[in-house]
Length: 395
Image 1: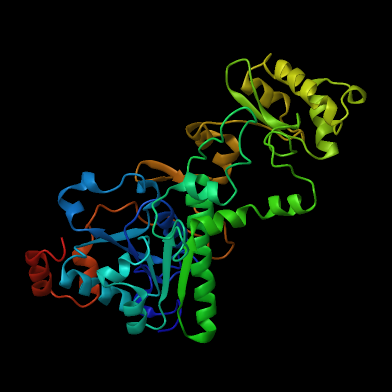
Image 2: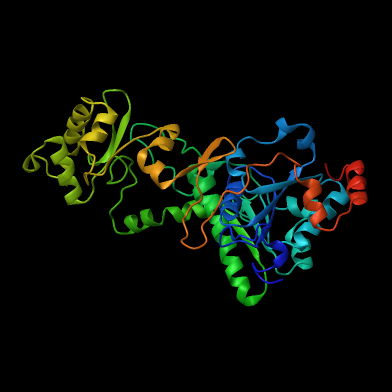
């Protein structure tokens, strides 16, 4: 099979829906980072079949709701992976796929009979992507964990937060999605690119602790240069600087101030009506008092009033918006940062490509919604489907 140019994989309408049009992905249903990484691939045009649990068809409350916002652009096949014929179904799909994604603990896919040893032997061009927290090896590989744990071990959690408080949970943005799903997609893209020359697939070991550690590259550079102290709230970017922090406004909402460069700092002072001669930017002995004074100033007006004050300015002052507010901000509306998907608001595909932009083509599927449709495309006839369903291999 050629990469991305198979007529059988072209969309029914003949359109190109992104740079990955023609790439087939088989995804074992999971939560968190793996679905997000696959969403990125699907937004860029990949054709995704998600393997859901057969039990979720009859008991949909068992399906995780945490991944609904990341489940667009897929079709769903419901399979019982504890059933031999169910495993055979997954193997058959993987034999025709470009990418296979699983998010189990190390060794689970092998025990189920869908590990890389089996699937890659049958399909040497397969890119087999594995999403875990700790990685496929190491003393913690078999341990449970969540975003907050991986960020903690990667050294990315300790620097975040106020000096007199505990590091806050980063809403799973940090390790699950930034260090996990994004790096999963990056690894898949790199493996597909390499395959175009070698003709061979490979295993992608995407670990959240690895990706999150990569996100701290700039911190390690600052540490090596002596420009960062491990003490929280004592550095340029962690809230110590009065010109790089958030401030509460009169209405209880917040503004974010990021006036690092001198010209932006000057614009900040100008907007606030402050005398630059009395507000030296990098005299750290003055920072605590400057922060206290800025807090008093910002508390005199509402968040939206401050947005008006700094409209058209390079002072790097922005309103801190709730997710629902972000949807309606004029800038986001004009750029189409958010889109409507079957009546729900979701972020639009990113990044934006000039000739082959990503698209949202279908909403999140119900478990097993496309079982008959997909399996028919892979050569199963009506009698096969009846037999598999009666035997409990699919639903």
